[in-house]
Image (cartoon, rainbow over all chains, first blue to last red):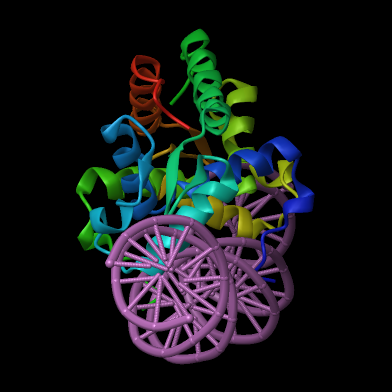
Amino acid sequence: MGATKTDYFTDSQNELAVLAKALGHPARIAIMEYLLKVDTCICGDIVNELPLSQPTVSQHLKELKNAGLIKGSIDGNSICYCINEPGLEKIKGFFEHITTHLEKKRNECC
Amino acid sequence: MGATKTDYFTDSQNELAVLAKALGHPARIAIMEYLLKVDTCICGDIVNELPLSQPTVSQHLKELKNAGLIKGSIDGNSICYCINEPGLEKIKGFFEHITTHLEKKRNECC
DNA sequence: TGTTTATATTGCAATATTACGATATTGTTT
DNA sequence: AAACAATATCGTAATATTGCAATATAAACA
C-alpha cells in the first residue's frame, strides 16, 4: 500500500492527475506564474525568485518538466526554461470540458 | 523538513496549489468525471464506480470536499455529492489567465 | 428494538514528497 | 589549465499521502 494504483485507471485519468499533481505545490505555481510574468523564456534567474534553496528549486523544475508543463534548453552556462504549451492545453481542456458540461445541465441538483 | 513551506508563498499561490493537488490523483479525477457524466448530484453509488475500497473512496471524497471542488449533502441514508462550481471557477481562471498571456507574446522564445 | 445499508473514522503499514547540505557536472572566463 | 558560475544529482531526514481492515455512526426498515 501507499503507492497510487495507476493501473486501475485510464491513461487519460492518470495523465491529467500527473499534470494536476505537478501544479499541486505553491513553489511550482510560483514558477509558472513567474514564467508568465517575464513573458519570455527565462535563463538562469529562477532560483533567486523563490524562497527555497537551489537544489529544491532544481527539483521542482524537474517535476514541472517531467509533467510536460515547462521545457528547458541549454543556453551556454545557464538553462532557458519556458512554458510548454501542449502540456497546458491538455489540462486546460479538462476544465473546459467540465464547464461546458456544467452549463448544459445545472438543474435538479443540490 | 519535508513539509511544504506554505508561509513563503502568497495566499493565491497556496490556494491554487491546494486545488491542483486535490486533482492530482487518478481516483479523484475519476470521481470528478463521474459526477460530470451522471449530470446530477449522485447519491450513494460512487464507491461502486471505483476500483478502490470504501474507506479509500471516502477519503478521496473528503479531500475533494476540503479543497472545495465538490460538495455533499445528507440525503436520508446516503450522501449526495456534486460539483462545487466556485472551486472549479478558481482553478479554471488560472488556466485562462495563462492562455491569454501566452497568446499575447509567444515570440522571442526557445 | 434489531438488522440492514451507506458512509465516516481510526489505526497502521507501505510508499511518496519536500527540503537541503554536500558534491558533481558543465560551460565560461581569466 | 585554474577559478568561477549555474545547474543537477546524491543522500538523507522530516513529513505527507495512499490504501485498507476494523470499527463507528446514522438513517431506513422489518
